[in-house]
Picture 1: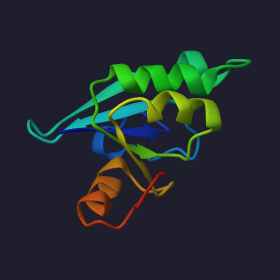
Picture 2: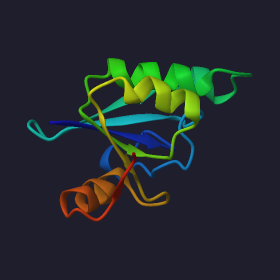
Picture 3: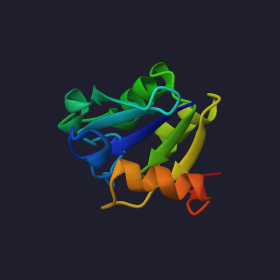
Length: 113
């Protein structure tokens, strides 16, 4: 299973969740089968004048992730992601990707719609 997190920086499992989606610095992808963390850069959208959420959503869909954990989504990003097979969860900003993964495994984070 692959889990994607919207994060503030590229620090692997220690990357802190960002409370933004489209303008997050990037996404941390965790492959739990291989126990590997990889970085997906989102810097092109950080200062975008518009469309950041949709562009980020397309990046997320293209990542191969099955689960997204992170910031709540705006309506346009939600429209893109709700058409995919991704399961969407609201993460805890300020906690690391690893901490949010554990919260997910323990059933302690809320699923989006």
